[in-house]
Length: 293
Image (cartoon, rainbow, N blue to C red; front, side):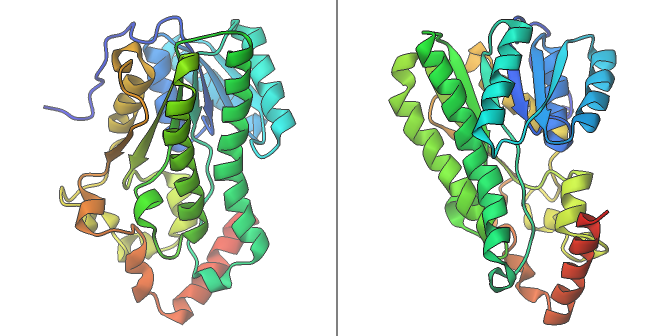
């Protein structure tokens, strides 16, 4: 069987409106494209509106679906509320919130400034909180039911991982929020679930995390029992199922899709213990250079 094939039938998400934060690139874009193919209307958000508009044009042409691109910094609650209002104005309702926006970098924790740590916490944890609170309150106020929140976390949300401590801290908070609200807000007709992906390489994110030849030096596929990294369609298949009505009895779960990686060795980035101080200095300069591009 070809695991890169599409899983659900073509009308599985017909009539649904789905908001994907960070939907303009990487895994967010892959999930967005598949949701469109399954009949959903999509709202994609990020801080870069020019990039979003280009993705909107590309995906509408590719799928024939409808995409609304909204500039939104999820760290700002007012911008999140404005994004929600724009989504409702465009499509009349929102059925699914997919909290995908994230930030990360690898570094020994003692090298991090307080501001650098806060940047990741603010995007991942505060951003997810802002979106979840705004959308949840809106649905409750308007007595709208059969709504879904899907959060993208990571396996080190429960194992922890060296060298990505801000991300691990923030993702752990997102996972706790997912499980907590799955119970508390079920009475309002909401379901909360999470996906914990293993290595799913995306050019932008992995170039920032492991610039230069580090991707070859630290081949994460070697840590996976299946000896390969994930394909984007595999993640999109799982996400589509979890936001569809087919998963209506799945609530409060985190589903790992990592080829068995975390079971083999907890802490996705722990192998970076082998990086010498000189290489950390080079890595920091390369990351700073990319940030300033």
